[in-house]
Image (cartoon, rainbow, N blue to C red; front, side):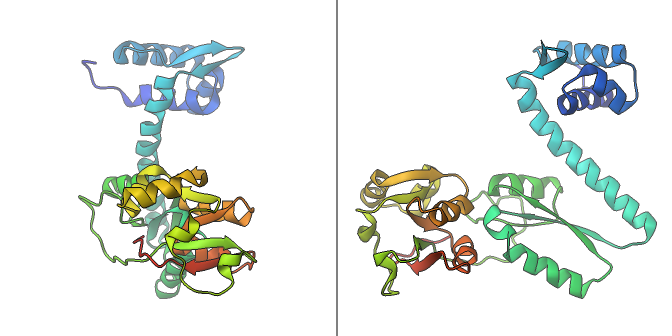
Length: 269
């Protein structure tokens, strides 16, 4: 790729991705169908790879197009936010704060922070975007969000850490399970004979450096999940015992269908 891509090419590409049709994309960005076709052709020629192939009356994106669109979405979301802030400033309504949150905190903890903002700055408004830690850190670097609540296991270089708290993972069990009866801390070894719901391998490795313990737990895993919140939902549905983050565990334990117990070994969250 020798020349810089033009904004109009990217706009046409995004419109086709969103609508799945050259005709619909043309209507969306208010230009003719041949103009959209030419912009896409020029973009493909500039990039050196195909973006779409025909499917019925519309078009379907290639794998390369989907990968490119993920980056375009991030760029456009930043532009959308700038536009929204500019409109709010023009209307005199006040500041707009963009929050980001991991899934585990989005249902409770983040809303507490937003409630405090509402009380202290009544003229402010807010937006909330829920994503993984890696994406939220990336968005913070890019200025897409002003403030994000993330897992500290992520790469925090080039971002300012305002507040940091170390919490500990817990054991989340279905109500009535024998291990939940006495209320005591649970040793990881007591989980070796249970059906387990665990985080993904990379997270588990970061949490439990002891490979022997980790491997024995993994042998009992019926389900591994990428998002902590999904551990809690799996336990709630009776799929097993979960190694859970304390935020999700606290939220789900309120409904009394699951029980949260501390672990004897401290696994920092």
